[in-house]
Image (cartoon, helix red, strand yellow):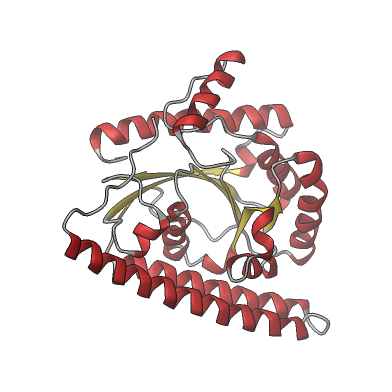
Length: 298
């Protein structure tokens, strides 16, 4: 079942102090993000002269801003972060598949990328509607993130065009895909269970049935550019924090379990690759079941 939401603090002085902290963090990061957008916009002057310089400026902007987000989690909020699975990862291009419960998942993945010094190499599958949003959307557009509408017939051409740019420039890459396509809720989980039963699939408890087309297209098209797929499972301890609660410092502990699968070991046929992805989410579901019982992935 979906994890219960992180409850509000009861004493009003505590709520007031947390709200003040959250407001300061939100203002600081929002103002910083718009400042980086200005730098990114100015980098357009470099693009006709040197596409490499254009990419380096935008990689620097992403590395700095997302690094500040990670620093807020670690240094300002002092969140306890527990990594299990892979102690370190090779310097390689990869696709990351992660479970999706809250917008805070993005802040958590920053912590893994920071540990591996890959923040500037992150690219995301993002809702198309975010493309024109000042700050987040504008910044991701400069980074060649993949804006999708969850309709593969419409998205395919756009995704393949971005992949061609990545391959042509041999761009360093950590491509993040929330393969469930949306955040976990009680209603969506019920729909996923009905879908699984109708197709004789494993009935999920803590994840949704993954949408395989984007993942299959990513691995198939980028196979010669990728070293591995990283299976990342995110577990929250005290309840599911919202992004606002993260800004308030309410996420006191988070766990990340990381499994690495070399691309050369993955099946090449699209149907087999889709089955491989579903198997990973079945394992992820079982892993979360154990986590909620024991409080640890170890």
